[in-house]
Length: 467
View 1: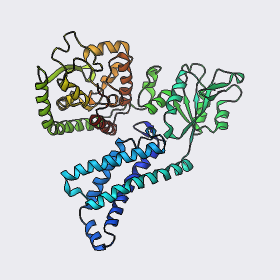
View 2: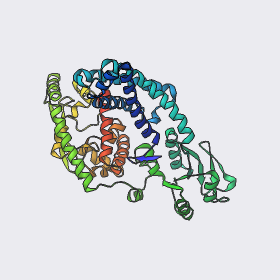
View 3: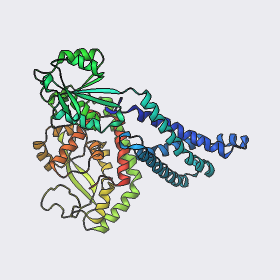
View 4: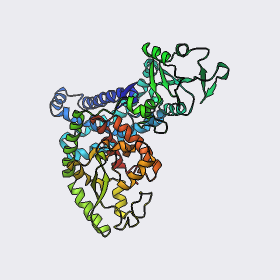
């Protein structure tokens, strides 16, 4: 198991990404060879043209489609049948997308014959490679055996989240209750709950072949076996704190029981000057490019908004930004002009205040395009926590612990919470979104931003997650 953005993912995903890139390239070469098998001269002439660029374009488009069909999110694929359907859908979508792109950029087409032969070979190559890799992986990949120190609510959360990640090749062997005697040993979630009063923790770890311990104790005072954990850690057993494990498995910080000490001592929350400079440079470049590229869309949206309902095209609203400083966010108006005569309100499902064109704009996030201006001005970032209204912030900081920590970075046009959780209309929703925001702050990096942008593109194209 390896860390990417501090989340645990199976290295199998990385292997699949690289292997299938090579197999798609191989399918294209096979398509060329089949097309020109009877003429070495034609084959050599064909390969001497801009074939490298054509091949790279072919591979990238298909792998992007694989990504958006969750073929590299192994926890989303259940069974061979689902996998084959996903492969067929991604190749079909890739073929359609390539057809459109080839119409716009005909020089990238590797030839109709080569193209159709290649896209026929791709699903066969990918399916066979996945079947073979599954069998090799089961035989060769080491299985980690985990033991949870604790048998309460926190331990149950760790076990539940781990059960959702079958792709990680981790087996939960059981739980340890430090306060029960040998006669009180029982089962919890179908697994044994062991006592350390007869056999010490070291003996249990050795007997059960444990390679990883997660400390999930609600109260550690006077019961944590520190000396044994230190010895096991020195001997090579991996020891983790439960909240770090939950964070890595779910992509959020579980706030219900997290202590302030976790924020102080956990890895992450690093923000070097270099990272901040790179992030701001990316924001500025993306804001300028995005604004230029979306000018035609903005003109069309402006006309539709004006025709749909009386009122201004743009809507300015006060939001809380970096270090709690307020600024004016710029959006296309998606609600009636009298939407807030009764004061600030949460958005709700099928909100009657939303106009007809406004519902469409919100579904595909088109109302947020003018926020590129906020990014250029330095009031927002391309990626970050969603900026909230001062009225809501004042209320939420009184009900939710650590809420103000989300203001330690610039708010974003998109963000980890936005792509993982729908628009919220309650304090509970705001609390859950804060958990994702804190995870983003813990793991902030340009690479993480890129991953969030890719997910945002998927949401924009599908209209998923909007209210």
